[in-house]
Structure formats: structure tokens, C-alpha cells
Image (cartoon, rainbow over all chains, first blue to last red; front, side, top):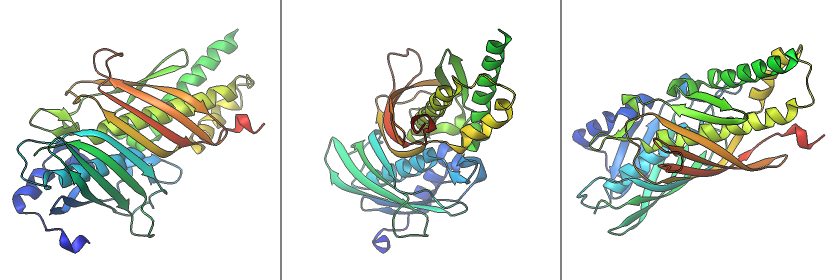
Length: 142
Length: 169
């Protein structure tokens, strides 16, 4: 599925790279287009939520999934304005393995001119089951 | 009598240690205020937290993180306070308690975030309300505001996995 998603142009890459909060937690846009997006985030010690196990904080995963969903929304058509999250639900399936880079994939599954519905999941590459899944509704930029 | 003072002191230490020891809380610069047993979390504004430079608005991820952190801290705190009532002996508490509370950081099962307004580039506050703590699961609602507590700009409701030893006694 990932192969169908185009690699972003330098301009788009740069835009996401320079978003302050994405920069702050080290998000990287890998692929984007056709209402889909793939983002990665390297493991960082300052983002740990459970000092005993070294597992990343849930909020970090929320940020990754929210950004990835937002990016997917912007490519589901020809955007006239920007988008904003209306609501986002995250299900945490299992803890992310410490030291692993997290990969998020988002896909818009319903696009209207008022709302865009998106689903996303985050993987750490160790198991088939994602570490978290997200379902979101975003304001439509179309 | 001095016991009460000491207990208050221990409580404060535990609260401070919660933020200090969770790296992500420290990274974001979250501070806690405690009136009675109610915690108010403060999220300072930093330029790094911007998600939409055009408005400018806070990133949805930071808002979600802030709400989730507040819920988790209020839960840890509530579980800790429940235990403490019958443990007035402070001698062994002071050392043990911080580990104790951190060993049982609640794990998020799910969280639903409602973005009501964009977050302006100013300081934000949040308070959590615990709907229920069972011995394994807890349900918590959180609100976050910038000016007036009864005009939240984001809300969340989540379920958490807890190990509440109070219930197994």
C-alpha cells in the first residue's frame, strides 16, 4: 500500500519540516499524496512517558498520528484553506518498543466539502499489530 | 499536629516528582498546582508548540498530550491519596512513595480529544475529573482552557489501565 503513496516534493517536505512542533519532536514526512501520508519519528529519551520502561508517552504518539492525519487531509483534493482537527480518538494497542522509530500511516476514507474522515495507525516494526490506531474528523480544506 | 504539615510536604514532593520524573512532562515544561486534592496543570507557551503558523495556533498533538498528561497525573494522584489515608507513618513513606507512584503510572487504553477552538499562543491550563476508578480500569474527563475555566478550547475523555491496590485489599 505504501508504494502507491508518492514521495513528497522538496517544497512540501520543507513546509512540514519547518512546522515548529513537528521539528520539536522530530517528525519526518516520508510520503504524501492521494489523501494518504506516512510519517516517522525517531525514538528520543526526552519523550519518555514511563521512566521505568523507557516507553514513549502516549501524547507523543497522539502528535504523530494527528500530524499524519492532517497531512493526509491536505492531499485529498485541491486545498483552498488549511485544516483543523475536530476530533481524534486514539486506541493504544500495546506499548511502543523503546529505541524503535515509530512509523505512522494515515488514509482519508471519506472526503466531503465540510468534513474529512481519516484513519491512521502507528507501528514500531516489531509486530504486525500496530502500537496505536487513530480515527479522526478534520475540517475540510476543499 | 506536625504530622499534617509533614504529610502536606510529602504530598507536594510526590507531585513535583511526578512531573520531574516523567521525561515528556519535563520536556514540555508542565507545572502543577494543587488546591486541596484538585490539580491544575499549566502548559507554558513556547514557539516550538505551534502547529499552524498562519493563525498562529498550538499543534493538536501538544493539546492532546497536555490533556492526556493531566488525566494521568490526576489519576496517579488520586490513587496515591487513597492509599495515604491509613499510612500516617512518614518515616518509610518519604523514600518509598515516589517509586511506588511511578511504578504504577496508568496506561492509556484510549483517549478521544475534542478540539473546540484553536489554541492561542498563550499559557494553557487543564483539570481532570475522574469519573470512576475501579481496580483495573479508570475513566477520566479533562478540560483545557486559556482564559476562563468554563470556556474550554479542548476536551478529552479517556480510559486507563490502573493497578489500584486499594481495591484489592
